[in-house]
Length: 183
Image 1 (cartoon, rainbow, N blue to C red):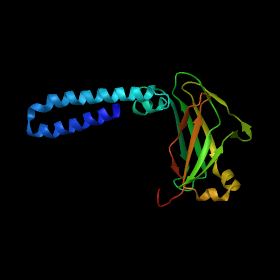
Image 2: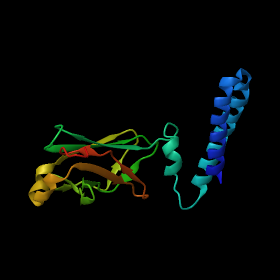
Image 3: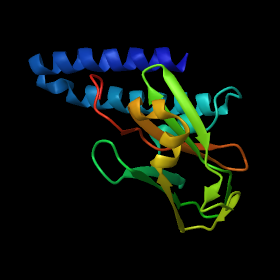
Image 4: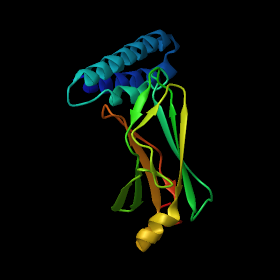
């Protein structure tokens, strides 16, 4: 219901905007309609957040500046055909967080391969307690994965996700491993 009202208010505001070009006195009414539209959007977000089937990440997408969270990023050493990746996890929350082992995802159009990263140099470092304000870096050597499965060299993109003990997942953006028609 809130989405329909939001759409109705937005269309009405556009109609007023076009009418304001002909009549200069309509700006006050336009401001009032825009304020009502913003208020309806806020109520719609609160309604979606309160529903059981939609978690609070729906609300967080629109108000990231208000909420502290965990940043996960994936960096590569070369533009194409990188030899190694570096996963950086930054805890911006006010509390300490237990992280489960991250999962490295290779993707090629509709095919995906997932690998759980348990540690480095034959040491298991996960689950990891990441304190508030701290940064964790993990260097990932891709030659180990390419030695395990030769077809991984032909996958185009890669990404990492990290899961908290509470169940919330944090994804990095996709990085391009090799050039394709789609990247």
